Structure formats: structure tokens, C-alpha cells
Amino acid sequence: MEPVTTTAFIATIVGYLAKTLKENKSFQDFTKDFTGATINWIRPLFLKDDETPKEALEKLAANPESEPRQKMIQASLETELEENPDAKEYLEEMYRVIKEKESGGEAIRIINSKNVVIGDSSVQGNFIVGDSNTIGK
Image 1: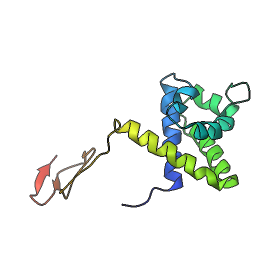
Image 2: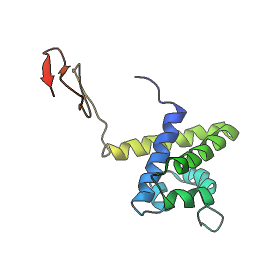
Image 3: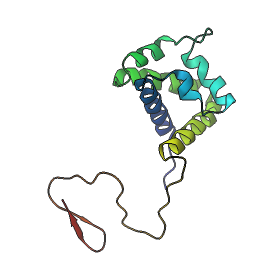
Image 4: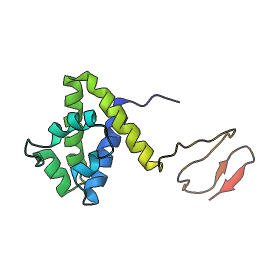
């Protein structure tokens, strides 16, 4: 299995933040499952001292599906990581927590299987899956 890149960590975090805001939840809802150290690290990136959102977070909250607004958040995280390389541990924790929440808290295991197709298999025309040459449409 390939290691997950920092870019993937950040993309997952930004996507989850956008999803949280789209559901009309707060930044505090977004951070509730992270450790105190991680919350203390990320809070100043997006919240002012009085706990009101900074401009980038306000703009994302106004339009969570906007790719340019998501890129603003991504750039903030990337800049912070560049200035503080030790922050990668916080990104890793956030990524792990988000992935656990997305999978319902359970690890997904596929044991003694090969040619496993997971996800959407919609293609134009026919396709063949696995050794038994099962034909799909």
C-alpha cells in the first residue's frame, strides 16, 4: 500500500471541513473529535482570538463547494506546514480521525481476496471483473 502524502492529508481535511460547513455545522463541530493539541494547533489558523472565523473560513462557510475557497484553506494549511514541519503529526491525526469517521469507526478489511472491485463501476459498454470473467454493464 502506498503511503498517504501530505497533500492527501490536507485534501481530506479540507473536504471534511467543507462538508461540515455545508451541513450548517460550526468549526467547533469540525474539531470536536481531535485531540486538544491538534485543536490548539488548528484553531488559530482559522479563528480569531474571540473565536470568530477568519476571512478564509468565513468565505468557505458562505460557499463550501467553491473550489477556490477550498484552495484558500488548503493554502493556509500548506503554509503552516511549511513554517512548522512538526505540524505534520496533527495533519496525520486529523486524517486518521476523519477516515475512521467515514468508515463508521471500523477498519475496512478484505481478507484472502483478489481482484476486488470497490466503488462505482459505471463505464461505457461492457467490462470484465476478476478471474471468472464476470461481465458487467
